[in-house]
Image (cartoon, rainbow over all chains, first blue to last red; front, side, top):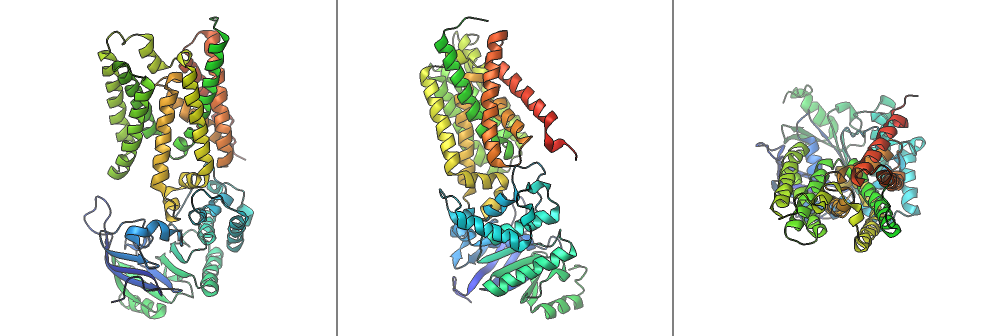
Length: 251
Length: 270
């Protein structure tokens, strides 16, 4: 058993159950998971297998009903607010209302607000980092456009830029390619790989699409009905689940 | 037009402008965060509170403030935890607070049909004293100060609460602060437009500004400008036509909103 808070572990989940309010069955059940510093892990599974709940449990947006979640050595049942400042999060299928009064530049900068802290304003450095994040993702031409006027794929890129602008130590991505065309998917995947290679960014990504697994991914975790049913090196694990006939996600 | 002493008119004009600014700044949060149901309940709770004040022969402003603050501090967290839909909150709280308000008015001997009682229903700007004006001025300053100091947290919360929480902002703290500010604003504006109409003064200017603008900072500047102007025009209209002031202000602000919808570039194609 790994001791809580060992510094080389970014994420530790021990016997975790998460049950949504009003539900009898847990969305995730008996999850034991460790993600090391600098690791790129992809969680795959069919719709409703608990992938999103797993990510939201890791960053403390969902409270656990059993077990323990430790992120960067901190118990998320007590310190989630502080730890979340170091966690970049890209939600699934984020779409803004077309009339909302928020321009892209501000939305990306918002990624840094938690880190900047209360009663302090973003300084030039923060603005520069947000602009660099927009440049990396290739959305600088949209900087002054209202976010609600962008397409689903463009808004998804804004969310990724926002997470990068946070300069996180841990990046959680929930179906980050779901609205992207093939070119954008390849470009964003390359960017995520580069961030992982150059900055050693620990990345936990969720997808239901086996073809979306980035080439830098070191470990694949397979979920079905709220449980982890397989994990390992990507090629082997994918072969294994193909043998188990889970490509149609009939588990 | 009824001839009135200059000092009373000046006090009323300043009160209109201050209430217009305060309500429409708070209104941006209400509209953007879809808090209408909770805010609507607060305005009626303030009405019930003011009625209780008349019954107990205490300052109606104080009891209105207590009632709307209780709604802000209890109903907000309660509805959040109990996951009650806005329709349920509005259905139950609206009728409960209005019912309580009328019971309190009915129990107040010799008050039910007096100017005082009508004042908290429809507003009575000429009863605004210099002390009221001072309090309203302090509230305006307080809200603008909080908005300036916590702008980035409030902006993030207004954009998306879940994302704000994910980036490490204490969203519950700021959410309850917003609810509290709505409650206080409603209570302080009661004398101007009354408990039944105050909420329109909160919603209309912000909704009008949002028809034209995509930048929250600009909305925050334009909304109070519209709020102050509609209050002022409404006040002058009521003097000219001898209409109730609260109703005149709401008619002007509703007309402004309709005009904004018609002229909104957000609704135009091409």
